[in-house]
Length: 440
Image (cartoon, rainbow, N blue to C red; front, side, top):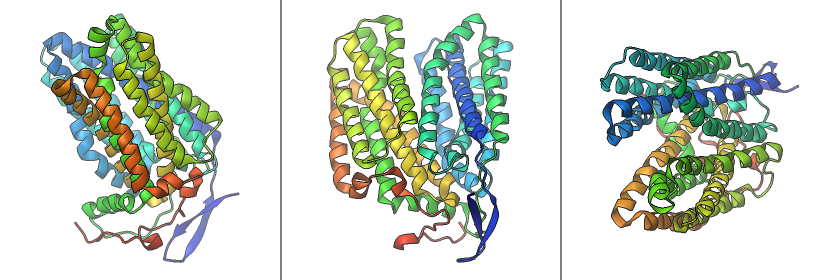
């Protein structure tokens, strides 16, 4: 039976209780992820409809996203440090409970029939803060619930559950809102509460406690950034995804394609929006049954290249079904990249750094999604919609070529577990220097 140890000195290890991985913990974690994601999707549909109903101004919908993104961007890195200095289960659970409270406040505003939008925006800022606190702890939790041998499958199943919730959530939100706002917000509140209480009961392996540090918050955050910076596999995988999505984030332009190019109307737009998630869910389900076991680095680069090619086909297509297929391929290839990147991050990171490294990952990928949509909109306004999409796809292919040259360790990695490091690895291992840990 496996054991883990507490580091009480540079070379002094004391055995602790045996590690117990319970199948129910993984099942419960997946259920919590599904309901929390579906709840967020349902609430997004409900609050978007409500705010647009009040203002009839498209800009007000943009502010919905901005109110959530800014606190997420500000709090993600500190949240990673908190996840490393406490139990990630507790941090994730409390964050989900906070999201449920925000949902209750949104429902209260709906019930009061207020015609002012600023109270909704104020609650959404708090909701974005709760999401920012939840991100690093949720992403760093899986390695504590399953064995290293089971981790690749668990990552694939988690991604599959997430994609299914992304597909189901918006449609369910529209149906529930049609039955009444109380149904939609009630489901969202219940979903967050179920996930929050479920996460609090998870068992699994506990992180070994190291010596207390006198480093300040800024120094600890800098240590996490430096850890990623000094490991080519980590830096290459995270930055490849960042720039690929930043350049290839053309799905933000789907309303223009649906209305002006494909002439499909809102029903067609809904199908186009679902296509990437459907492709991603199918691939994630396949990876859960047959995980990638060889040539992981080469497959990651190939997947991002296919993402770029699918983006170009999407931009050139004037046929609805070809566009639908291109978007499905785009989502499927992106899922391969996400799966490999997430597995490499988990295998490459020791327990004491998981929260901070996951925070860097969440911050980079979250920024790429938001900035990618912004970049696509600006480029489309500058050179036109179709040229903007094509340029983005070509740019993604150029990034693949450059990253294969700049990050040969990522290109050459074979098995995902090859990136594994000892759990008590320190940032200076393998000759990697540490940033100053003076109090900051």
